Length: 216
Ligand code: SF4
Ligand code: SF4
View 1 (cartoon, rainbow, N blue to C red):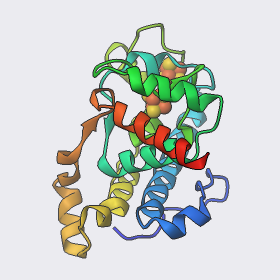
View 2: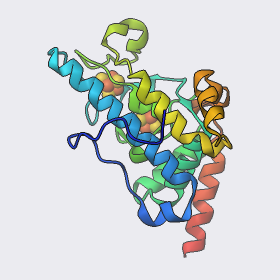
View 3: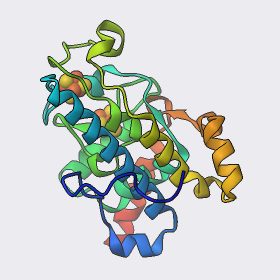
């Protein structure tokens, strides 16, 4: 395992860039690099299915997964990214709606970032959301195809997932090469996982409100 990307294929999705912010926040390149690796792995896995004439059903505006799933894993570095993006990048009119949804969110409610059938933090959404892709037909209302038709749910390519978590390890203080490999092989990072729907989002709503007040 190394810090290099797994492939250089030019047809793959582009890495999200925030050059000014990336030079200010040390955590940000790690997160965006990790997301780029995840997106690359997903694009390859989907294209492999496509070659077997198995078609992706996920598309813009299809949102039952975001309303149905109650246990989306999210890691501390991803939460830092979500806090930053919501506070500094989400613009009106979505911003006011998001603040309201975060303020009224109760643990266990569906994801508060879904607004008008779109993800308000799409560029920085968690790995679990990026990796959940479904083939053959769109999910029925309330259906979680992981349980109803597991074969239609994309299985992420393990090497890409491992490489993405490896890329994020310095954020958690793991910098030694042997320690990194040990952390990946023993899934140590997974002990840090939280559940997105069980997080308390009121604090983020308050941070966004304070940020807005300082701008005026
Ligand atoms: S996972 Fe299901 S509900 Fe979500 S975008 Fe894909 S097909 Fe639509
Ligand atoms: S973070 Fe975005 S993609 Fe993930 S569940 Fe929430 S609205 Fe859906």
